[in-house]
View 1 (cartoon, rainbow, N blue to C red):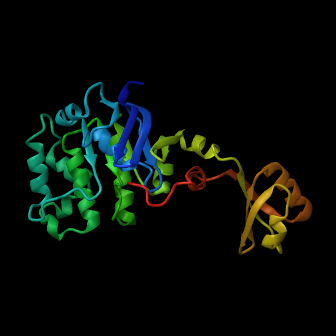
View 2: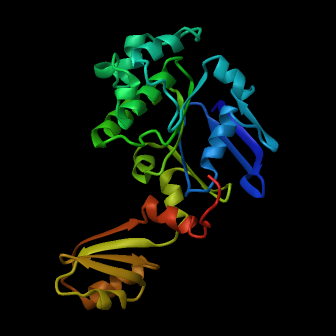
View 3: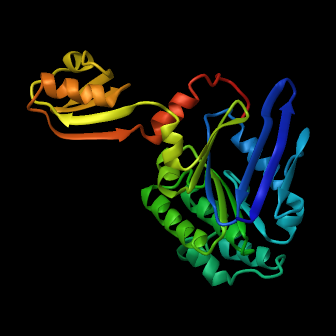
Length: 300
């Protein structure tokens, strides 16, 4: 797969704090990649380095084989950043029109507004829009130049459920054309549902990188769920192979160090158990396990 961008040996320090620590990452064209990590992991700094907004102390950023600024100037890379400033007295339609004038091959304004879900309030001043509507405007501006690489920092922040659903439907249409997407998010369900690949950061380094299933598999253990009439949590937690147990309305959820041993113990002690399911840990559990030692108060 051709390379969309590469980060090689990147480090960035702010005073005594190392925000990004010798980070290397390569993303191919057409990939949809979720960048995850707790506050202070270095996600936003990594995004700013990729966009050329700040310069690394060491290492190199390449976007389509060149410098980040060249990719931005050519319209090949665009970004939707959280809390990006928008002029309060200007309408979304006017902003899109202004931005189209600086691109060589912009998308049609009507298409941009429709795809971003902005049409119904396109002629309303930005100062009168809600937080979720402003996020849609930022998305429209990012689409205006018809980029090949779209970088999103917390794209659905402030959006309601319907807004998030519409946004990701639009993003699926965008990525289906072979475009590359990198998005940083705190919503793990979005990464699990939308990303082809997950990159998990901690302390400015990559600690896991691969498909969602592979990242989940990096954390040992399985979850066993079953309907177990009459069982209490203490009895279930005492079963061989089980680390923790909880019961809700007769439905048990057992975290297992050894699911094979646990299911044999369960059926031996509770032969009436039914509706048994065994799954890998979810992305959230893997996220918590792989970032458990992240210190509080770290930068960005």
